[in-house]
Length: 339
Image (cartoon, rainbow, N blue to C red; front, side, top):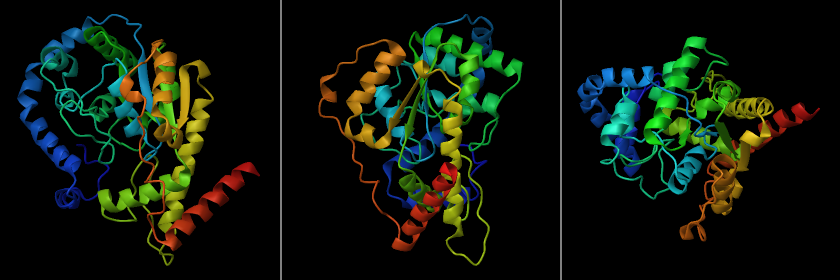
């Protein structure tokens, strides 16, 4: 776990230990195991370099899940991984920050399948076979800040990125799937780098996104005033005790507008946009749509027939004053846009 965007890692550790959340406990176990894997990762580093130097182009699809923080991207990622015939960076492979391809080739038969669970803890999921957001990988080219990304990178970095994914695709022999919210900020760049890319964006009612970010700030950062999520900024302390809500609404609005701006630059044939509410109500339709559009595959699984997800988080979970402030602020922001 990178702590570059966590202002109080010790406090976060305490909150995770006291949470009673099994996924939170697994994250701590995952971080411990990652330390144990360091010597093996270093041993595989030379093998990894050879694979990257010998990489050849692959036409297998790369599928990236996009969306703002707290918009349902992790749930969508988990579900697509479960029902599509794809490869992905698992929690176990993420131990090997210098040699994920070599580690996959050596250990993929030993790694358990991802759990059939929709539980997560702020973007992380349980199980060594569970899908990982792979920050360690994307950081190679985009930097360490989890909440901001460059619009473009050097040609050298683009070449390295292509080499990695071509090698991954040829090693796994399956399309690649990943969710990392930060990638939403630079999707047009990925579109130019990879001719075989496909995007799946999920969006959610902004009122409930803002509410969820507030709750995330309190749990992850231990404070309403410390930023969390894409394009977040710390809130200044002033006489208005709810001013941080305005900052969060501005954050949600800016992410929404940037996604729209980026979406307009990408061929609609390579892009699917779905709502969180529709996905929870009828996930099978979304899975089948992505299977057809991204993979040219017909997805059939009897377990999809009655699959649904709870929309309980789309309800008021803050005080009336806080919730009213969110609705009022977002209404003003979107009305100004339409003027």
